[in-house]
Length: 261
Ligand SMILES: C[S@@+](CC[C@H](N)C(=O)[O-])C[C@H]1O[C@@H](n2cnc3c(N)ncnc32)[C@H](O)[C@@H]1O
Image (cartoon, rainbow, N blue to C red; front, side, top):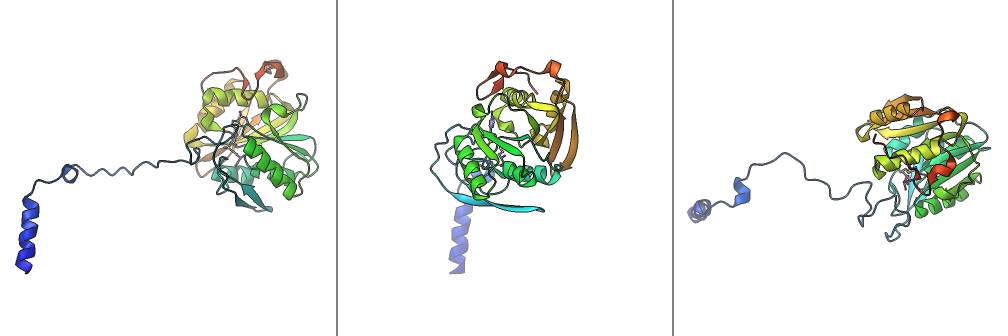
């Protein structure tokens, strides 16, 4: 009986080997078919009106000084967990100014804006995004947390006269360099004199070259934290002589500055 089985094995070995058997084994892991910046339907989280079916969830934002449970949904950035870059930002920034207008640029469902508002309860925190589902979630989350000085609005709905004493942002690097530069120009030039922005950027997504680009365009930029492949940049308001007029800024995207990083 065992002889019969061995015979069968011999016969199997004598048949031509399939091509996949003789092909060299590669050590490269298969590519993931989805990534964090693409939603399940292949749409981007920075679409104005995400088409993905609703999939409500919650994310617990647990920081040394606060705990927020925030509602999330499909079609927004990082709906299943606090993004690690956002965590680095929130654990690295100094306390925000306690009054005036502050900005979270690209608010998503609101972890940055609501942390800012919790740390500066007297200030008005503007939470802006191009993604309307994000804006709605951020608004709901602010109301639920009793943070009534958060203003969650579409990027084009901030009154033109508002100037920010501080900006915090995990900016949407994936929109591409020209759009990123336009967006940053649009909002950094709305910093009040003496104001500053804190941006978290992943090193492999170009934090060093972004720092150079900012410096080259008049925004004195320093690296204030570096952790887990993320850099937190402090960007000082540039001199008013080099500022772009708010009128030069196109809706949704910003000034028409298409220089490469
Ligand atoms: C990296 S996510 C950060 C979201 C949220 N702050 C967080 O930390 O979870 C960047 C956000 O910027 C938004 N965004 C993309 N383009 C934008 C633009 N031109 N102006 C404002 N927000 C934009 C995206 O929709 C997205 O919600």
